[in-house]
Length: 182
Ligand code: CO
Image (tube, rainbow, N blue to C red):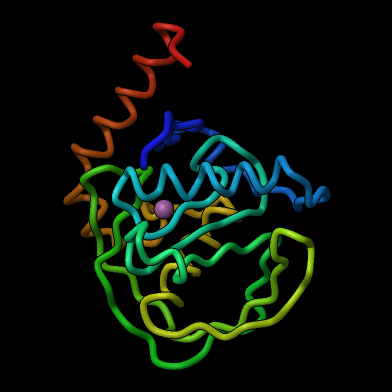
């Protein structure tokens, strides 16, 4: 059941999206609550992944569920302080979207397998391999922790194709800033 959302999506070009996120030090109830609220917002927004900077937090936390379905909670993956140890496999092309770039989709090439070292909510570290769509989502969300965005990964042709939409997001951000919202 839906509860009131704790977080709002941070949209491009909000500066927090450009910061390198900082490691989590406290594996406490607040972290668990942050992750729960991030998953809630992800499902409500019809996304398959979300990184903490997208809710305005400069923390190395990402969540995903490749099914995008709240009912398949067994497919939720929560990575705290992740490091991509290795990227390998086949380079694959896929049209990615991003909740911080509503309505914008662009082809991005990424390897289809990754090895990731990360902590869980209790601070227990482990190393896992992911492949296919999950590996893609992990890489997209990991980019957010490094301040790297969809607009950086798309081709020059796509950046041109999306010029108007990107300008519109910038105008919207400036309007919100000048009206003192948020
Ligand atoms: Co994104």
